[in-house]
Image (cartoon, rainbow, N blue to C red; front, side, top):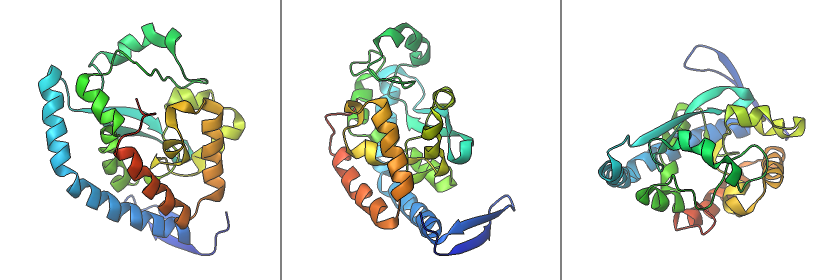
Length: 219
């Protein structure tokens, strides 16, 4: 992608960071939209938190190590949509994986709670990632963040998706999600990395609103 202007700034750790014009305005947009999103969705956050707690008494939030830009690892936040022992049970379900490649996807996953089905269907479970965006670990638009063990199994060409910050939404989110196999998913992410611009980001954000109204391909 062409870089028309380079801006030097110092981050919160005192490290000099070079950003092109697109990255600069995208970061400003991420900060503004994440703050607005956190405020607007606060009532939903409170309701969902209560419902999760009532269902099984477990923790409201779920955090997991994911791989970000240039391979940097960070803790990604979600509303917990699965049983507290979900990771242990996953080992027993690996032979039922419906996703090709290193990713695990199962449409009728027995680990998902009752409230979990709803918040995953509407993508409400992803709302806590607005905090990741505000912190600068993620962006509104970008490839979905992968688990470290998944990245270890990537083919060399797939690593291009790590050149940008991971995001809440991208081509995969708006073009079928679980109906897209692993390799096509990676191709869509690389396509985004190569074609990314502000207009494309805005288009993807608007398309994502349809997902929040209920996506039949979400699970």
